[in-house]
Image (cartoon, rainbow, N blue to C red; front, side, top):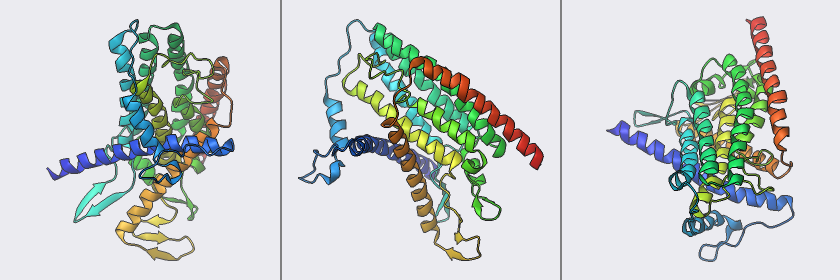
Length: 359
């Protein structure tokens, strides 16, 4: 009974963290773009007269979205038209359950792993769930019964096969170095040291793989410069016939993907929750000194480190979104098939050669 309650608490905590942080990514995007364009950004929503640099704006936007008119075109395939945004939202939301937020928390003799699902094929699980989101794009484009939305849905499918191959290949080198598909094991491997002082993070062992993963995973979010399915500048997006809450769910799903990409980059290539030289009992510095800390402080530092890394990569993706122009349709196809995939294969070959030499 206690184990079941702990599991439910972890599921709720992970979802609340995921959804609240995603909600505030909408604020971060508006503020970051405003700073880059010499504007103030969203700052009007207040709570009892307090604006706090617009921090209440995401909640105001969410409430407004919930009560806006939910219109379903009479010419659409109604059931699939209504189901599509929920499908995209669901398959993205469940991915957070496989991400480790920290090490084992010990309370009163009870050990609580700060991860909901520690499954053997964690990497495959998340890649599969993210791949399923394309069905939400395809269904919305087809079920809207509009030639422009259908074009956006087909673009989503074409984009999927362009970057998903490179995305998967970029992780093969990482799995060769850290021989596991389990996220907790990969994070544990990164807790070791190279040459006795350098954190053994994935970015140091697989720099090319990390770069390819970053570029290919950003296409997963379907945002500029990879916004072919939405085509904001062309008005052919797959959600053209959506409004109100269902449109908001598609927008929210895009930001959820930004957050899950940041979580994957942190977990796979940047040590996850690890802090350099921080062990289970405190800091052990390579020059011989140590700083012992209580267990609770160590866990707090780990969770804080994980959040700082994740927020940084969210900021980086938003920076790219407001810095670079969008790819043309044929340019993205060429970029995926003629550049990212060959680089991914090269990374696998080089990794295999280096591992054979060092063996």
